[in-house]
Image 1: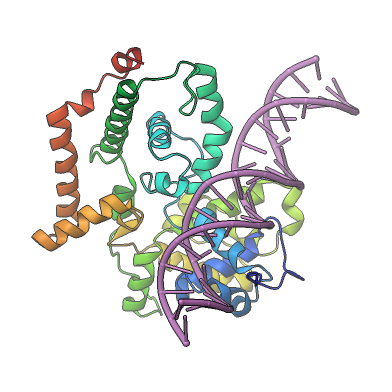
Image 2 (image 1 turned 60 degrees about the horizontal axis):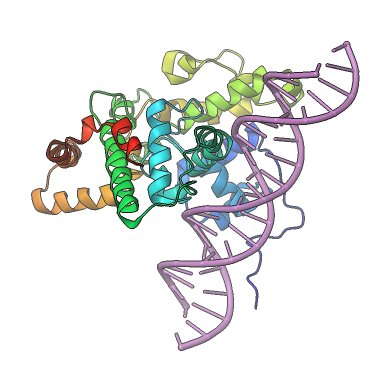
Length: 315
DNA sequence: AAGGTACTCAACCGCCCTATA
DNA sequence: TTATAGGGCGGTTGAGTACCT
């Protein structure tokens, strides 16, 4: 017996999500948390497949997502992780906490593949077959480089997801009607989806072709700074009012655990768990342990100074 | 300016894995 | 043990946009 469809295919809306749908989804998830995707369409009234809801959330609306403009560092990391892990985009994405697997996959397919082809450094096919020794050496190099990239990415000197998200820790919400405990719980999990949706709405209103759809949107078009607590928009509809207000309130709070640790790779999570058991430290301590591990390894192998060109020659 | 082509990326499809009854 | 549901993942598609001729 084949698997039944996750939802009734008839009458299910497909194609791009509208800001209205996004708001409904984000509001629901902020209230109830993600999961139980199957029930979301019925509970929210969204005429969408449950999978579509999940995808929209994980790839677009989820907090802490960075979009576009991959840095050189990220690029290198993706290339080397791809060499190590293959097309396991979810695993690769776990090393880049702010990026989604879909984003990385797209970036690989549209940019990096071509780039590598140009450089004739395809990770899959080498024009000259390697001996076992050469292969092992190359694999080791890849591991070193991936670790180096991870080391760079987690370096406390550079801005990261953890630092971004920890900046506005537990600000009080003056006049909030929502109980502080529940708000804290929610915002611990969803620190910045409001920021994402604000960006989305901003982009939407910029597009003249989409002006016709400006209902709720018209009132939510604002700069990022406005959204992050600077001030309230002046002409808002009643429909958007409550949603927007709740988003503002939630936005001003933050997560203690942050998206960083949540989206860490299983390997890193394992390290954290291990260190928690052994030392019972807080997040900062655990991060330090992780960094120590990295830098210890780096120290042993002079990892952070690993000469890329030198090794490239040996292949 | 118009038409054709290439590129990008959000979203969908279908398979797989896991949890549960 | 098996059937089923829910969710995750990678591959692919196609609409919108940018670029080129």
